[in-house]
Image (cartoon, rainbow, N blue to C red; front, side, top):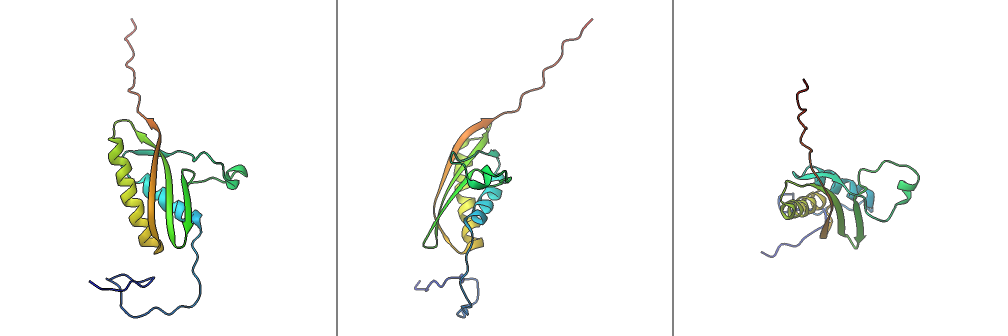
Length: 138
């Protein structure tokens, strides 16, 4: 198949050339938020773990949904580093692989950019403590 890729078009979309009206920029924070929301929907993920480097917004007290996502954008390609807390009862490698697939798909679909890498760091595990049965007193 010798289809030429044009930015903003996909095979299921119209083949007419797009009219360029100006530059479109998507902030890395938006990409990080997309990645974080997608990650949190993956079964086995119980939370996001903070990426070790503190951002300016964290220092000034801004609540960050994307605190566990680091984004590097270069020449319309994206490299993501995602840090999570996983459920101890899940198969960790399966959770990580699903995050990679789903985040890559969502970011590419919503932004038109190419995701070259999705690194997943499992920083912690969580578990539910079973409620302790109290011994009858009597």
